[in-house]
Image (tube, rainbow, N blue to C red; front, side, top):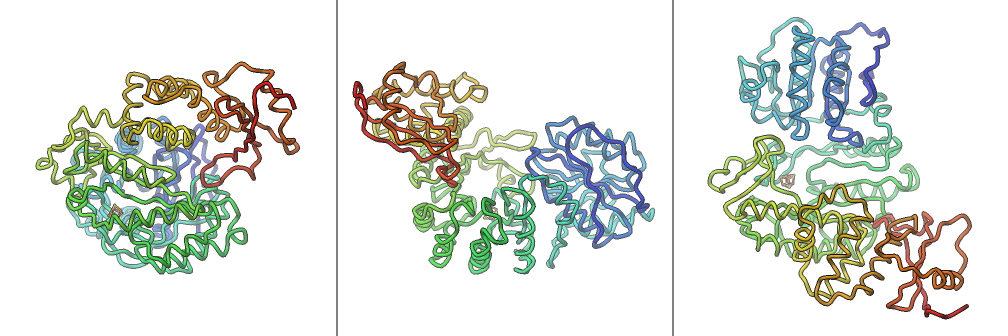
Length: 582
Ligand code: SF4
């Protein structure tokens, strides 16, 4: 197998070493959202070149949206390619638009081909808006891109390749093949991966058709043969990455196939799969049956993570977005998964959906929160090009940003001010709940104040309105929320301090307390420390006196004491009374 060349994503453009391979180059460029991500798309296109246009040499050039656009331009130009392909997503479109003129100026004769979900469903509009783009691929890109590159490298102007749109044929229908797709994994891919998150695709398409999503528009679901899926899974697990993220849209839409792959991971974990590697799956929570749940309950602790989209618990909203959900079964299944304690569970809600008012959203939020998942992600509706919901913007009163990511700013049911306020609630949710750093604090506050979870996070968001919370250090943020929490009815500042101390010791291996939680009592602390069993050799210990409970609490920061699901260190405690000497 001939590997594509890879141009490294960071650092200054390098002078290219002379290449013995004299084949014309099909260069594929992508701006990743962050360095840690490594999209499969350019490697899939390179695999297409290997399969359908082996007379060409594919070269993948990666950069990120945070690097100067010129950097990727120079890498692509240095290759003097016969054709350039650019992968387009909602996260990188501004960079792509800035890149195109640079490429066209330097290489006026080189055809530029765009592809990816951000352009695939509006090809004519893209060709009109971006004069430097010569072609846009609609649908799956591997075969159309390769056949187009082959034709262009031969000097042919190609207009009749399925899925290839040009100014002569701007609306060609999407290429939606039905067979297996070529494997993107090759030696060059693995050397470029460099420990980043690895992606694996064992199925394409989704059997559902939620109105905000594009995945249901890609034809019927296709599955890789299980043997290939297992081989690729093993290869990625041994690539040096810590996380293998499956991009299958609904991994468990075939229940028995999902069991087979989960069992395979369980059987191989610690053998051909290194311990510590995590596999992340997006699943339909209400699709899990008893057999699935039994398989999942037997997974090695920390080996897999599940992401489950709830989106809403409001039935009319679910109906409006064409999302059939058995919400009772969904909740039951999530509770069962969490009770087993071996899997990190992440659930998602979307704000700004049709018919959902702020009051309804707060109810959905509280229902979701009560499930007790490790993460609750609050996303805002995005009206993607090609998604059915985008067509209903007028009737739903959707206002959204013109530029990607086309995020909702108001709906008929959710006003602009309320949605803006919800962003602050989401910020509080991220820092307090999803960070996992304030678990006991939140439990205490909800119990003592009687507030509903939504009201609590909303209150924090409003209390910190005007503060740039993203720039606050953890200590400064802790001080800010501690001050606010002390004003809530029923909260005892000293008792709250003790609970926050426990959270801090469980989540920070320095064992150091922020100033706002420190009590100057060196003699008490010294006496308390003497009462403890010795710490394991070469182990840092964090300890504190809980004055309202007359207890001493401590954590020994060993890897073994850290829960792989929550990332929290085990706390131990024992009675301790001030003034006591051991
Ligand atoms: S949101 Fe999920 S279930 Fe719905 S169509 Fe998209 S991928 Fe499929």
